Image 1 (tube, chains in turn brown, red):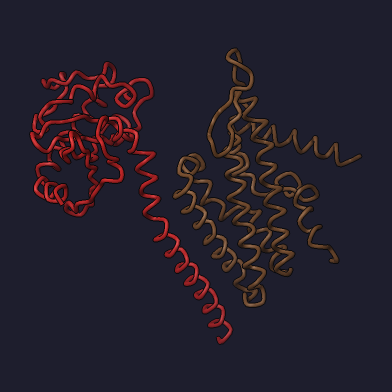
Image 2 (image 1 turned 60 degrees about the horizontal axis):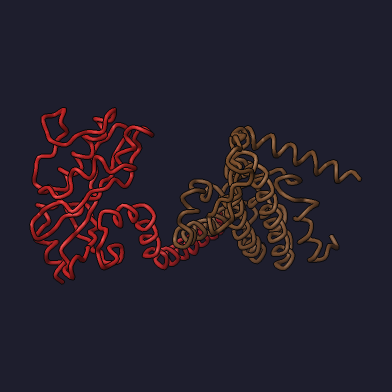
Length: 203
Length: 194
């Protein structure tokens, strides 16, 4: 276990990138990646929760008794998710309306609990911070990539995050490939991207 | 036994700290959240029916307790006088509750304008109550105390074709708001003058 902090960080960006390598937390991935804006928003919210819960759980890892650790982890995670939810309502209400139920659902996102259980509960604060940040950024990147792919093909637009401006990509004659913005399309996209990543990884 | 108590105390402490933290965050963001909700849900409708007012009705608002409910009122300034209040009431539509904002002139009890905020009516039929002014504009200038009914019920409001139930719901909401207005008028006057 002689990994450096940098390695803990970078593993989240490729070697263990969720949801492609770490195939967890698919529910929000499939549901929110209809537009780039939603994908990025969800990614940032999850990253915040991941980093905060990883750091706190790592700090408290000797205090938390083994028998009730899952309950404690969930309390920590749920607290941060509620903070995110309130802050998002206060400062990015339109985004909150679009993401809706998927923000509170970060509580049960397996990535967050998975990192807490598999990493933060066994490692130091700095390593846990790097791990959370790496996995979070990796998750955001994957969501963004998936969302770009789906939005451009499915609606023919590209929504710039934060500004909510939709730019038509193909011009007025484009007939949207609506399959891509529906749930089955998300599965197909995810599968194709996983396939491409595996092919690249083999070389 | 001692071990059990230890586990219990740890989880209890976690929950207490978490609850306390959330209470702090909530009280810190509550006012802003309320404003954001107004701005994005009711805001566009209020701005539309209070067109031409010289203040921001979303900021210039107050609350009155009505029975077990707390209602928000938005003040509009026209010609330099605080003479219009707008508030929301609900009617029963085809797909659920229809929220209607009614703006009333305090001087002569006439309707300045009405607008639909939230609804779950059929897209293309009932949803026109919100997207098109045909229905809502009929209320403008009438007295709030009129018994609003659609023509199918021997009233004088022309309903949207294909959406009689929605139109009835909007009329119902305006009638409800007349009741609220009559009930709370003295309190509204006090607050507006204050």
